[in-house]
Length: 402
Image 1 (tube, rainbow, N blue to C red):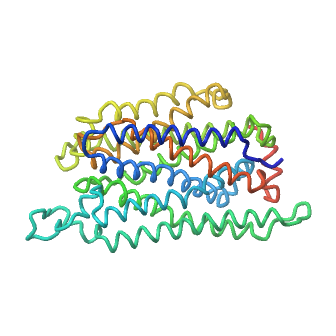
Image 2: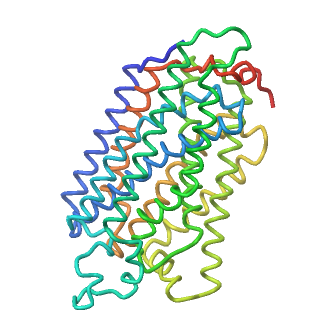
Image 3: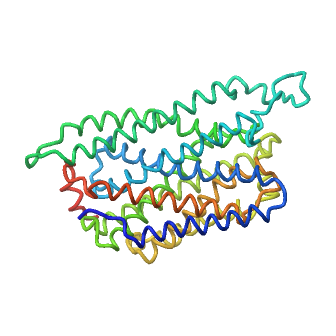
């Protein structure tokens, strides 16, 4: 059975966008100062958050081919559908980076004019020492390479999957493109292994340019990965409620629940490890990152950690809870929102300092992006078969029982 976007789904996504736009405009006209910087900061937050959800889905699809993972075949098309938002969010990020390069915004202090000129009043010796890496030509070279390679792999995997659907294969025959997918998956994961961290350094960590952490790349990666798993889980539950994805059984839901639980624990471990090591060493140039967040964003920053750790730990610990929609749905929704808050607290302290807040502009823009993300993803789902029936592990996947 193919999926068709219902009028109800269209109305819901449009309503999300309209509510978000209304909240954004209210915040825009009632904001007192620093409004432009706040809008740019939120464009970065939402562009990055939703882009990395799509990117992590691409990573997981590639990982499935490399490991020849059978259980994920029944949900593979949902992962691929979320990848369709990559061009939209990439465009948003490019606008933000162009704005920084042209000095339309001041999100990145190292992009400021005269920052590496000893004769300038804005000269910064620390930034100058990092200018071999943090300079506009090299930054743009890396950014264009990220987008070009990631978007190419996303396009290639989706294209080959659609081609595979058109093949007529004998029973037990393997698609000729299957081995190519494994090879391309290896290439992508090798490239992604470095660029998932370096892009986080470039786009997020360089906001607080005087600070650095060797764990930051892994921390950002775990956040994008669990957010992607949550989105796919929610979409699978939604499609099953409409009578689709009948091949997806409790064991598949259980596996998605296990991934959500496991990566939530990984994210929590990395959050605490990064904080504990810096707090214990108490080196001034390192603790400055946390001082700003604890002074001005303590509730958001610490609250995000405890929700993302304690909620899945106590609610999803049992085997049955990972299969039960009553437990999975609220936990997934709450964790999804708090991971958006996590990205918010990566960006606002370094860009807005003590002027940032969680207000109408932030909530409004989040809802607009969320509505657009759902709309693009559902339309992508409607343009392809929901099951990859020519996948060599399709039969094994539909008979999965754990």
